[in-house]
Image (cartoon, rainbow, N blue to C red; front, top):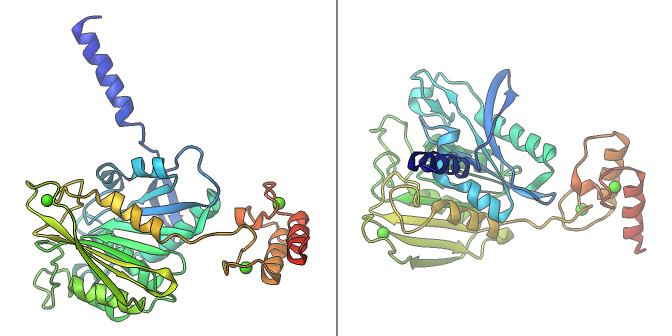
Length: 351
Ligand SMILES: [Ca+2]
Ligand SMILES: [Ca+2]
Ligand SMILES: [Ca+2]
């Protein structure tokens, strides 16, 4: 083999490795608009696997954050599914999530509605967990994650915004059905989403909150009464930053609220660029996995017991011939029918 041939086969090999995780684009029609997303489904996942949404930043793309976050590699090891949706294009030709920036006042796209519908579609289509669906994202994508925490806490069970913030309009209006776990990673020198907020709208995004106030909101909603502060090892001494962690614990429902304060850090996704002491994606997954809900097959109303309410819902499901969902399949034979009703009844009677 000549040197050139070796080089070509090296490149082909590298190309295959590099694209081992590359995904086709899926389309989804929401509200008359054609939306798109990438989906990574690891081999041999169990029914009820967790679902993680990773949202790109303003002007960013689904493919971009799929590459730099490295979340597919973590998902492959930990056996969860990752969805990277694509935002729509605004009047400036930039991809965005509609969180109500000042210069988006004429935008009507309902990205919260889109995310809810897409989550429910994927949960059913791939038999994923309805209790363990999470959202993280960079900047504008982190902000949509916060908006989901406020407006769709029944669908998203915890969120992890990176370099994102809460606009004052939805901070003021934030009344989640149930408070959920929140994890923020934010640089103190972030020159796009300022750590200290923007109370006179000098950046033109609209008024947004400072990070400490946002963390107070979530630790308050979650009734946390223990704060553990720590400094992470400054593993990379040439990245110009280090991390102080604030973990609010002893919260209701075993929830947690974490802040990774990147001292002197910028508008970054740590591990991909900026601070290199941590891998933000790995920390986000660690947080989600610590806040996972336990599911019991047959407990279709998620109250951790199997009783008459579950029996009635499973009867409904089998009579209406609704689409298959693993939690309803009590005897685990891949069908939902009269046998599941019998086996739940038998279970309740103690047979
Ligand atoms: Ca460092
Ligand atoms: Ca139940
Ligand atoms: Ca069955």
